[in-house]
Length: 447
Image 1 (tube, rainbow, N blue to C red):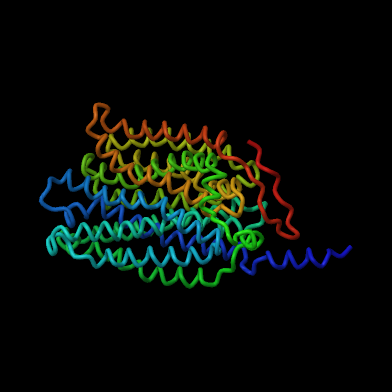
Image 2 (cartoon, helix red, strand yellow; image 1 turned 90 degrees about the vertical axis):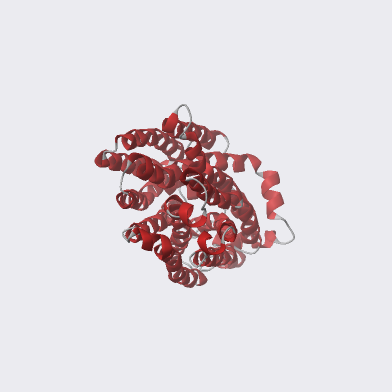
């Protein structure tokens, strides 16, 4: 029997000309750019900014101040999540994501041309801080939006697989950024500190242009099209905060462990390995690059597995595994044995971090209705980002405590366990809004 004309028109109106592969590619490239910009800032904060922008203080104080500017960008990320969530839930995902990528790129390139403390004095760190805040606002809207364009364009039974590419881009950007900085650190010390550190920031301009071109060709997602008529004359921020506070809290606790472990692994441990253990910084950067590349490769594997066995058990299990392996990694780090450090780092990233990273896009998307997904999802993720952003700064302070460096991974493990419990108890499950014609939906995940 022929389908009713009205149903046919509705299906046409909510379908997308953008294929799941193209949407996943756009999400991947966009987050590559955003996290390339983010990671080169974090790497420069660990290795360069203390000397370049914070003079006339001790090296330890300069490092703390440098990490403090890194952390302040995270303070405004929840604001960015609400701002761009409002735009994305009210006017469309594509509009919000075009703005975020342009903002992030502009701020990063401008950091590359900033005058230093030696040139303009205290004005230099102030300008650095302002541009870091712009970065924070942009990435606050980027993560949640990239997740949605990948997952909402995907067939319901492959949302885990396609969604995984949105977060694989984050690690892809980390790989590129760390590799670029590893090459830059081969320069003579004087050249690195005077102009070499600027090169990774200026290279961002070329990458941003590619990202803008790819995203400009995207169609709006089917899920947003289906609820677009319901977005008029309403406030998605008020609706998200008023109707979904428990889910937002659960997302925050889940992602808090993810972010804390990741930035301790890639930002703080880099500084600790170079300054306290005595490992060559270029060698350490290459180790981090290889371990991060493993996350890119494993993300789709875990995402596809979640389409078969469910999201929650992988998210919770990945959190606990990452927390335990981070403790083992610090044990290896204190030995100074490069082979042991590398193996522990690979295990932490591939078996722990990648498991959560590949699954959480579909996990978060399916926990919220389409009308508030961008706002509520982004806000929860970015509240967790605050914890992750301050993790390197807190770690520097904890290093001198009575427990010493061991207090850092132990606290991260506790945070991960809390997140794993929250995945089961606080994050509700919601059915996908859109049904894709001629594709059999996956069974609801069992938890």
